[in-house]
Structures are given as structure tokens and as C-alpha cells.
Length: 113
Length: 108
Image (cartoon, rainbow over all chains, first blue to last red; front, side, top):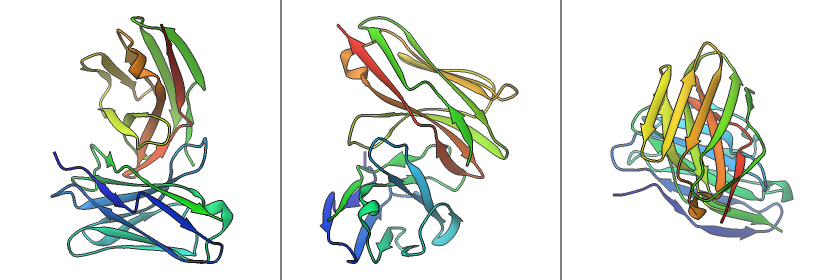
């Protein structure tokens, strides 16, 4: 069965650079969530989209932005990267905003040097 | 944020049973999830409870008491591959808030 696809799997950037992470949800899933997981920490909710509209916002820095496109894939744009942005970034998708089951992608490991 | 508490670590023997408790204090509760996460990998969905009671899925069972703000995940017939972090996550206003996770170590 198709799963949530994230790209790239690994990314190394320098401070103050920009990064774009992509997420392709499971087919027919119209809701996408982004989470940030620092080393040894639990995943922290960043932002979510339902039917291409932002549905909720968590602890996402102003330097980050995200959107969901017409094909339901989502992109997380991160600018002015800081060392503290180094983390695993997970995307999850669910059939609808009720998120009765949210399935996670394999994550993108971002390292800022 | 939400107050979600679960033990930090648990150790058990292969073939045994382990119960991981999770307590939460929240409003706007939409359900409780349990995820398994191996180091450096994505959380994998295990169970979802929205009504009180026990949900059983093979070797894994999850229980919820909404009035007590309490859930547990029961792992039976433990296998070495069950060594992982188990995350309790509460859905509040349809977004997930995670507990810090319980690291389960299964020993031979």
C-alpha cells in the first residue's frame, strides 16, 4: 500500500540558508500535518492543512512557511536556518481533518552546520 | 501545551507482558493514539481510542478512560523487535500532542 512520501530523506544546509521539504500524502488523504522532532524529544506539531487550506498552527517559527498544493502535496519552507533547526521533520497524512488515523512519512533529517 | 505523562523507561523479558500507562489533562479531546517509534524512524500507528474501553489488535491492546484521563498500551508475548519508544498522543482540536515516549527494552 502507498505510504506518505517525504523528500529529501537527508539534507545538510549551512546557517542562514533556505531549505524546502516536500511531503506527498497517501492517495485520497486530504489532510497533512508537519512535526519537528529534535534529538531525544517527542514530535512537536508545527502546522496542518486540510483541503489546501491551513487548518491549524502550532509552534512554527515565523521563518518557516508551508502550503498544500492542488494535488494535496505539501511543502515546508524554512529560511534563515539556525543550528537549532537541526531535527527530524515528519509529515503525516490522514483521510480527513478528523485524523482518526494519522500515518507518518519516513521523515527528513535536516542538519544545519 | 497538553499535560501528557508516561513513564520514561520500561524493561521486560522476551515473552512477557508490559503495560505502558499514559495520563493526560486536556480539553477538546478528540481521541488518543499510540505510536511505536524506532530510533531515527517515523512513528508507526498502533492504535486509536475515542470511546472508553479496550481495543485489541493482535499482541497489542489499548484502553481508554476519558473520565480519568487515562490510557494504557498492553504489549503481550514480547519479542525482541518490540524494543522501541512508545508514544502516547492526544488529539486535541484535531491535532496531535505527543507525550515524551516510553522506551521499552526487551531482554532475552
